[in-house]
Image 1 (cartoon, rainbow, N blue to C red):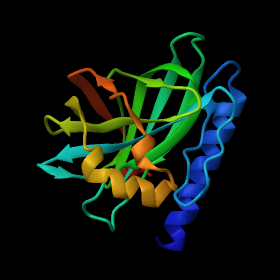
Image 2: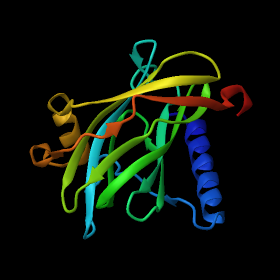
Image 3: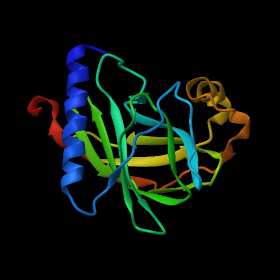
Image 4: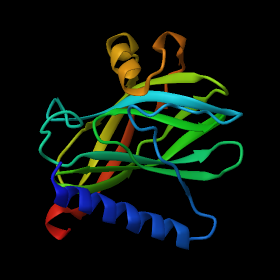
Length: 201
């Protein structure tokens, strides 16, 4: 990654943190587990691992065109308390691990950045975090169903654990054999809107 890109990411994260801190009662910023970092779970918390695939023109944009920026983030809401959490970026290459308090979470907002710019949208989804353990939520496959500044998207969740088991173990130092499988439940239809074209950044 070029230095300029790192600076852009740092500045973008800083602006996001300042924006979140200024709004009372808004989403709590949560960082995903970084590859190679030992996971220390708090009492009553659990770990979810999974993968996001953004399909456009039959290609997974989270792994193709590595020279171009690509990030995926989401805003969550705890079903029991209504508390919101912002995880942005959740991942830059598809794979992710995230530690959260046990409970049911709804995905209420999506953010995706690619070479076209920053997209925001909605594809309702729900997943469960189980206490004191690791849960595999699947590969969330989100497909651009059209072209233009505002586009429909479709979603489905696949169980690709056997294919990805070695990758998870290597990245996050977890024993994938101990993973509980509880796939994310995704709506079949949603939308993305291009809120900040690359030329305007």
